[in-house]
Length: 95
Image 1 (cartoon, one colour):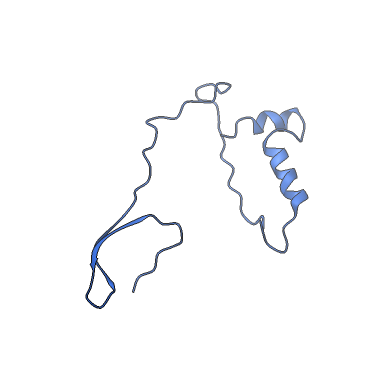
Image 2 (cartoon, rainbow, N blue to C red):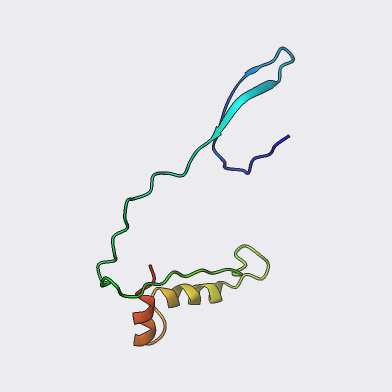
């Protein structure tokens, strides 16, 4: 027996048996949606200028140790709402 994660879109081809169970002959999973050919640069970024991606873990969202203030400070920092001019310039290159 196989199990699927909740939320997985799956197409099944089969028929109901005389015993009342569904017998699967074939199945297919939906693929990833079409991706854009190229991503345009942010209008305020120059070609060749460094860009950054933020990878975050351990925020404990929904857990008993979740800290809303720390999470909000993180969001404010990466969106340029906190810190000095140098911090804001650096965070403006997060894509």
